[in-house]
Image (tube, rainbow, N blue to C red):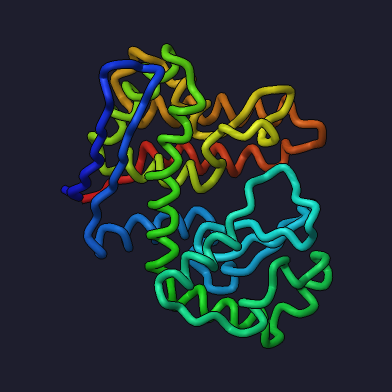
Amino acid sequence: MLRLIFCFFLLLTSLSAISQVYSIDLTPQQADKLGQLIWKNEGQQKQTNLTSWNENEDFPSLGLGHFIWYPSSEKGSFKEQFPELLQFFQDHGVVLPRWLARSELAPWKSRAQFYREFDQPQLTELRLLLNKHFDLQVQFIIKRLETGIPLILADSNNTEIKVINYQLARLTMLPEGIFALLDYINFKGEGVLSKESYQGQGWGLKQVLLTMPLKYDHALRAFALSADEVLTRRVKNAPGDELHWLKGWRVRVHGYQHIMLN
């Protein structure tokens, strides 16, 4: 059985004054296995998919976790992660190509330009860099969960905190539950930013944990059903047509209950 340690430290004196430390302790082999599963969900484990730009989006999605990098200083509504990943690389001693280290914004200003230059030196070099540092990208995703859960709790009221902690305890008893949490927070975020919502309703990890049935024996199935409900609501609330994404999103989240890690 994959051995995962997910430690919770809660000041019990007041639910309104929370101080928590979350830590996920994985061996390099365990982290690699979980990373490969996330990479399968994001890019079918193909090196060419380390650099992609989806149709009808205003930004490229880069790396193992398809991290967003905006080409304009006018940021969109989704959380930008790629510049943080580059800083994480540098903090761990990775020397970035000069063009990349100097780029505050994504240097490709449109999807058409991105694919015209797909096999030119910059994007080719970027794919090689991302492929080489797969392990650091997995660590970056793990760090997002470790820092994201305290953000979720800080954004929650006392009743929500009790529900979230209960559901986290159920999920983190299972290695597959750790994977579901890691994958979903990378996929759809924490759910605490007001701009990441439609009609006042978010679709991040917070919303999934709060929507999970409280008396459902199978935690992973409860998580999958909840994620389906939250993402379906997003599509219904969206100002534009997002229905074409929903089938793939459902396949992804319902896949959590069929994964076996040992």
